[in-house]
Length: 284
Ligand SMILES: [Fe+2]
Image (cartoon, rainbow, N blue to C red; front, side):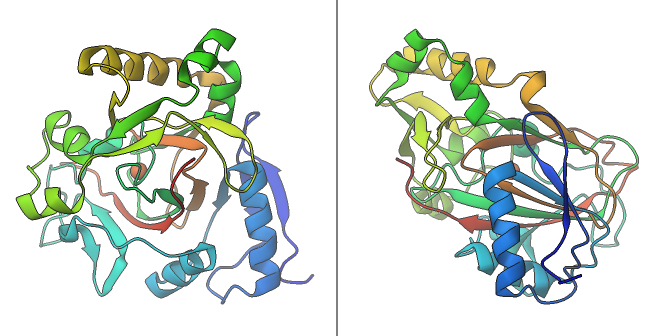
């Protein structure tokens, strides 16, 4: 069997696929990447289980998709790899600290929507995973768009939302405040609420928790509209809930999916994840 031959098994009705027979401990050549990327566009989320993935291979895989993000919150950088964002609840002695590393991930969001150039794909690898909780849930935003009423589709056409990391992180989740330098680096940006996927041409809802308000509306009215569309978007029938095993690798398309993690016992359980976000484009 050639390396690029692998089995594709759907994960749930709406989207997502498990790729069986891919070994990412070896370099990814053009033929294999071509098939992975085609599956990524078709299924929006790919799961590869049982992977032995050194950090350098994760970064190299990310670079096949595009330019990788170096995160502004530099306290999360994984050792020696600024392209990897290291999510861990362990303390300096390697013991569960009782502190969640990023409470913002508990709310539905799309990675990097607070930048002008937003996240294209995220590659998340489970190093250590809790026995309970700490799942990642994904929701299909093509489906969310398709399910909007024609009145709502018309209302949202051409409307832009303001995305603001300082809002989602500090004000809603009570995380450590951002420094003035970090705030200057990531001022609020606006993006269309309905975006067209640049590669598939399909329309999808592009909001999530980083969206604070609506550019064309007063703050309170805009806030209500953001909450309303976010609430309508998430439905069980278009959600996939991933329960992590060590060695799982999940690659997802941030342009047409939103995601969140679920809580776990940060004082007793261990959860160590390595994340690589690939930059995409300015949404349109
Ligand atoms: Fe995320």
